[in-house]
Structure formats: structure tokens, C-alpha cells
Length: 160
Image (cartoon, rainbow, N blue to C red; front, side):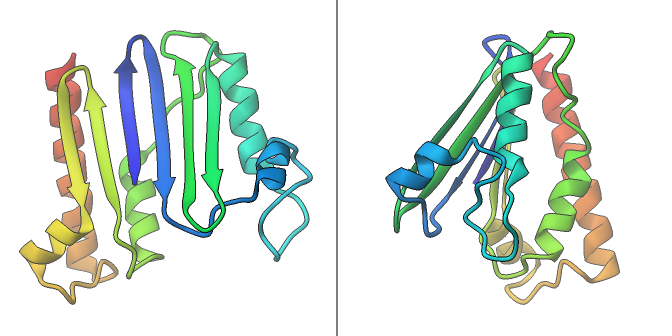
């Protein structure tokens, strides 16, 4: 699950929760080291260390919790108005690409700005469009982009 909040008490936050394999206590202690990774395909893992660095540079913090065999929770907070806060980026296209490369994954996103919110859930989309929907199909891919863009835009407008 992905949760994005553009204004959580003056912070831009995003969190990711999964129910994957999780990490051991020893790995969790080393996870901020750029030369440590849980992957077997390479020997470095720059992602967590870069997020940790950017959160600190912009007045925020990174929280990582994990239990072996249960999953992982990561939350990054950035002081919203800080000069060094990286931009959120193109969330719509990021989600579209993520979905077409992970077709069987149950994905949920909660998007907040103030009290306004939008929830995207692939199970709900599949109920609406059909269980065997292919996010790679050009018409579905296009519809998905418009759907996300409209709903995220509405939340941004309503939230301030």
C-alpha cells in the first residue's frame, strides 16, 4: 500500500507498506547503508540511503520497520516548504508503470491533501472493469492515467 499526504502537519509524507518477506533485525540495522541490499541481483542498495539523506536535508525523517516473514513499513517525511525538499514527481505515470509491470499485485494508494482524500484500489478497479483487465491494453492504460489525474487533481483542489 502506498500513502501520499501532501500536507500532514506541514510535511509531505509518503509511506509504503507491504506484506512481503520482511527483513531480519540485523538487516534492519544496516538498511541505511548504501552498500547493503536485500536483493540478490546486485551488491548495493542506494534507495533507502538516498531517501534517508533527502529527508534529513529537508527537515524530515525516515522511519523503517520490518518483521521477517511479515513485511515492511517505510515512511518518509519532508518539511513541505523546505527549500531542499525534492518534488513529489509524476505520481500518475509512476503508478501506471508500476501497475503494468506488476499485473497480479493487489495495489492500494491513499492520497491526501488536508482532509481531502482519494483511494485507488486495484481490486475495486477490477470489479468495475472486469477481473481479467489488462492494464497494458492501450485504452485501459489511457483511461487509468485520466482516472488518476482527475482524482488526484480533485484532491489537490479540495485540499488547498
